[in-house]
Image 1 (cartoon, rainbow over the protein chains, first blue to last red):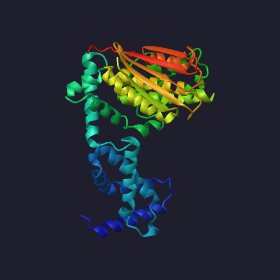
Image 2 (cartoon, one colour):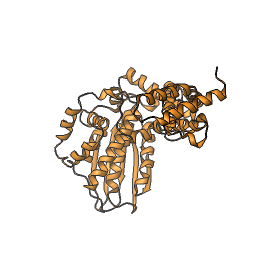
Image 3 (cartoon, rainbow over the protein chains, first blue to last red):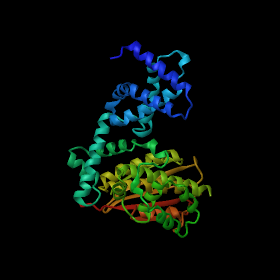
Image 4 (cartoon, rainbow over the protein chains, first blue to last red):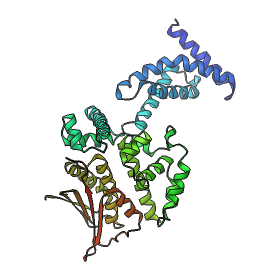
Length: 253
Length: 123
């Protein structure tokens, strides 16, 4: 087992060699990997502090590791800091950014987050059972809560993902498949809506697909949610945002 | 049947209030979650039609009436807004989101949009 001073000395040597090497040299990559591996426990340690906030620890470790790599790349030996002192804020910064981007856009009390998840689960169960979208009253009855609770929970759910929706089209939705070309065609064949074409062309693929399924295939929001493996609230938000974009674009025409 | 009235300043900031109010009334009218989600989108669309280009002048009057078959939402905008025609995109959207739409321009120059969503669930 290394003592703290030894460990610090090894860091210093590795970082010195790292800094001296060409940016694209293989050796530099090897040292970087070794540095990442050596400091992974620090990432785990910091990620665990955020582990009870509803995001999987693995995800937090993954984004924390990105922070670690950034810290390795940016570290300047001459400043005289200990590496772990320097790296911690960068790692925490990445983890916090993950929460900012990927999850609750506004602070929602834990009680409501949990209720929201329960309501969503019950909605989808009843949807299957009844073979139609349930009413808030049906969900309330099943959960033994009030309609007011159901509505409050659903509104709190809509705070989830607000920011990530504004981001680029996601890279993790293979469900969109190859049918997008065909969708473009039929969307573009809308008679009377000539001025929409350029606006629709600007939408990201997922928004286009949802727009098409809702307004041209006449599928319900729940059906679309199921098909694209999103929550119904998520589909709702994407639709609202898409329609707003088209509306603004049409007015400016 | 009882009607809920809501009058808001004619600006885009109040669309959220109208949307949420309509969603709550719709919940008590036994519309389904999907219908409520669609109604929210329809309110966005209708609100922006009756608001027109003249932001911050006048008010938008909203009335929500529980009818036997479901919920009727009426929006009346300030004077001087033109009604959408049936071939417009807004109309296409609205007709996919609610069961019935009616648009009329009153003699005083206001546009009135009536949206109706019918209950599908057997309560």
